[in-house]
Image (cartoon, rainbow, N blue to C red; front, side):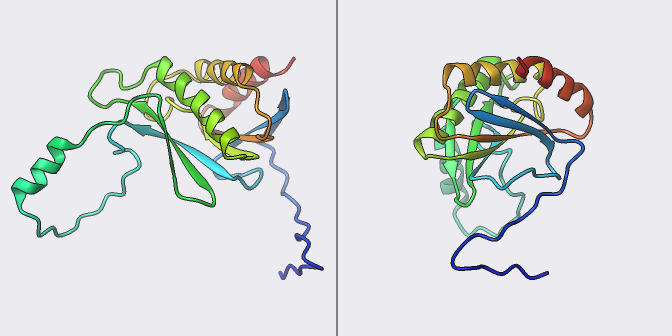
Length: 192
């Protein structure tokens, strides 16, 4: 199928209806809860759950290294962790917001405070960069044991404390497993 541009205008595209997507307006933002494999719209930025040494997003690859072992070990020793709650911005189109919500040297590896700080940091960074759409996974729930309800309450609180001006749409990425329960909690917390 070919899409033709007319006089520099964007092509008119239709989204396929998603029965597992749920849309709720919250202030000036529309939050759409949908699984990862059913994107409800294109996004300007994608948030990701990360740890202090950025191991969770590291590509597993083996490569030959001709560097002297002592020099290599010195680099490892000098490596400093990122502080929990911080947001790192990488890439572009879409931007990647790496949310440092895990310290793999601790048990549990996450804290509610870190997830809360990361959510507020993501919202501030989105405003600073004039992001209008964001994909947001449920931080702390994939690699940690943060309850979905707790994450959703933290998100609601972050949005209430930092009402977005530029951010118009959030794609809340929900897991396939347990999605009905998560959607019920989502509706309860975000509907008036």
